[in-house]
Image (tube, rainbow, N blue to C red; front, side, top):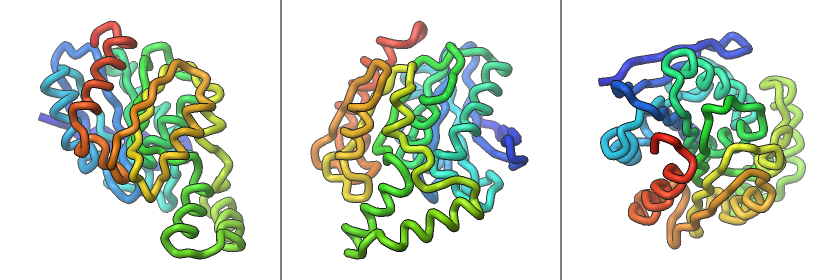
Amino acid sequence: LHEDVFIQSDDGLKLHATFFPRESAKVTVICFHGYTSEGMSDYIGLSDYYLRRRGYQMLLVDERAHGQSEGKYIGFGCLDRYDSLKWIDLFLEKCNTEIVLHGTSMGGANVLMTSGLELPSQVKAIVSDCAFTSPKEVFTHVLHTMYHMPAFPLIQISDRINRRQAGYGMDECNAAREVKKAKVPILFIHGDADTFVPVEMCEKVYENCASEKRKLIIKGAAHAESYYKDMGAYEHALDEWLKLHLEHA
């Protein structure tokens, strides 16, 4: 059983998520998907782990301009981090459970950027899977490696357009900078065969992270493939991390 949940963002957008409730659950996992995806697409595998095996609730968020959520411009974590606070507040009002944030790709960048904000004490742990540092750095990497094009002047032009139309710069919030303010423990997961978001970005963010941290690098995993490449290692890392930081793990 699941239900649709809606909130309004600070800039007036109607945002959607799919909620999988569980009676008397002590933990809610709020999940954030990757670029051009939606909440119900990226967590099919992990939903069995969280819902059935751990007995948690799950909230699968459609980030702005994705799925059923409104928005003309994608937030790339820079805007979505403030939406994340709204979802956290909703669940503190709704059921006041312990909260885990889990993000994949763009959603991973979102939860890392969210970690730099002042978070309620009920947010106990963060899981970031194949997150990029910033839109500027990931697009620069893609231009170089996939299209063999120089970043200049395309990135600078895009940055100006993005500031004018979407309201934020492409390096305005960078996960590697934001985690310097993090207080919530963060588990970093990345595949060493990721050609879209290179594993070096994970290493850079990990080094800068100010909170308690752990890192899992999955051999041979491409972008967003770590869970399916080595489910045993991924779930073992989650098991240990959640038991370490949740009262009701």
